[in-house]
Image 1: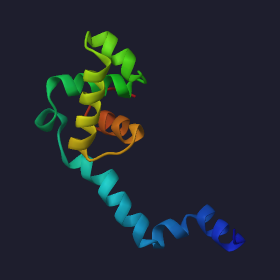
Image 2: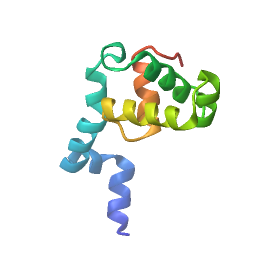
Image 3: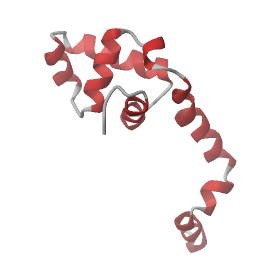
Image 4: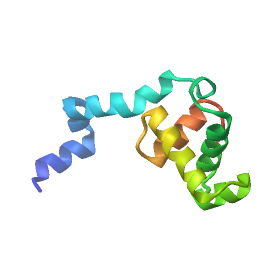
Length: 103
């Protein structure tokens, strides 16, 4: 790898000047914050997102809610689709932003 690229990344100049990174961050990080969890998520999906944000696995969430693993997995996938997020980290960030969990 070119040392110049490494230096630019370290100084974060590359991220600010790269239109792909700016576009990606707008779509995946800013979009979820335009919604309120109470408006678009069901009560069960809100319970699942709290479990995810508290570091629980899908199996642990299923056991704590008294539902099957597949049902918990379905709720988790559906809430991620509704929020347009593609990682657990963004789910956690969204839950904190909406006040579903405290840091």
